[in-house]
Image (cartoon, rainbow over all chains, first blue to last red; front, side, top):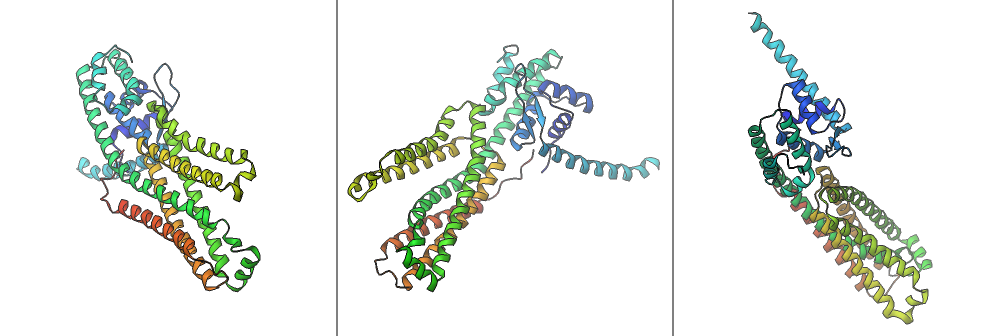
Length: 100
Length: 293
């Protein structure tokens, strides 16, 4: 399963605890510097909910919070482990060039 | 809906109706919150339009995929219901056919007769278990869909099989036992036909739910596995019924006509073939692009 960047950002944000749309947008902006638009954010939320990787909680003043499910956390962990391996390999291969 | 950002409300009409019913309010609130936080409106408007296009494309892909699964599942369901009704009616007293003492004697000299009966029972149990598993998975999704999209008709259709079963079984218990004696053949046959009509009506209600509601990919996969299990059970049960009939006739314990067994076997074979063809056809259609989340 390929994960798009907004999906990874949303899952990473929810790994910290349940959040509603605006809290998600602000958190993602804070930790990744990415300003997700409302259509992109809710597109990711709807796909994640369809797959059962997040679930909606009862709404608070019409702002509905979402939380990550066990399946979502598992999928995110696998994706991040792969990404970490790629990043480590890539950085180590770039190192000789930057020092040369 | 809030009216703080009328342009956002207008852009939301570009989304698929079901999607808008589920996320529209939240999305409009998010736009208002982001505007209050200083986010520029034009990039947000462009992003909303891109989101609408993506939502329609996702819906189209899901519709194509689920349409294949839907048609196959509905074909298997109708075949299984017809098969199960005939097999249950035919098989419920095979263990004591043509009479308990004779069946015992036949079983001793022709072990294939009771063996076939037991295989028929196990196949029936597997089919019922697979149907129950799929029914729970689909019912949970259908209730979720009805609540999300405020579709009372889905809930009403789901209630039809329960209401019919309770009414028919309740009526059977309430009617005096003398209603089903030889002297009351018309009532007994009428009640049986009413039961058959109830089964058909219940199945049609379930088909309506399957056609009208949206289900998760995981639920379609459960449905596919259940359909395969049910079809396998039908193949095995048809084989067992044929074996039972051939050995039973070969034992020459019963000299009556074979038309009942032949008719039942023919119905079982036709419904089984229909289910097998539906599953094979669904698998033969080209698979779409792998899903991306």
